[in-house]
Length: 239
Image (cartoon, rainbow, N blue to C red):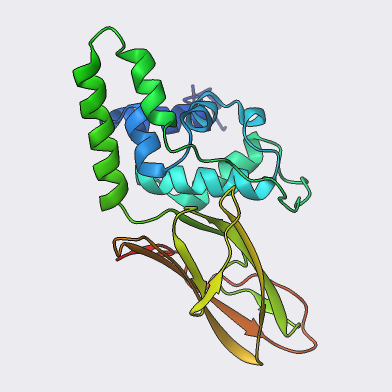
């Protein structure tokens, strides 16, 4: 005769709680995490509190932000994305073409620090400003590519490349200069050839720091559009 017994299973950890615990385990504050990810503090706070409705409406932006935060925290990006899609109800969300991207304000973190330490005095404010300036010079430029995904297979002879980059950076796609608008968004169309096409997107700073993302696109005339994850790691390379 079978004996049944009840077991108390631990409750599933929500995505926001996983992000917050991981950040605190690494000794990071919201301010320092914002500097490392180059994402506004309000978006990091929204992700940690599960307030996904406070993020930009475009699904591409939400997934790009959660991937960036997961990578900085050393979490499994694919697992984090799947959990966000489930918790934020993005399974059936349409892919919205982003027309207005996030605005990056260079002095946002400095202003936030000023409100926190206004009682300490002007010396601390000056030191924080100088540290921010040095970090901006030392760190590679910010670069995210929303589409195409790595290993995409298409039947067309051209493809749209879009993403965001640091506004002051020089952006190239296969060594061709690409314009970045005031919001840091770039969109361009690239001609392809049959077979495997290598697309190299690079953002370079004035002082030589470069961030590079490589995508491999396969053109198969007569085939439908599918996704093929050839290499989901090492998307971003800082030189």
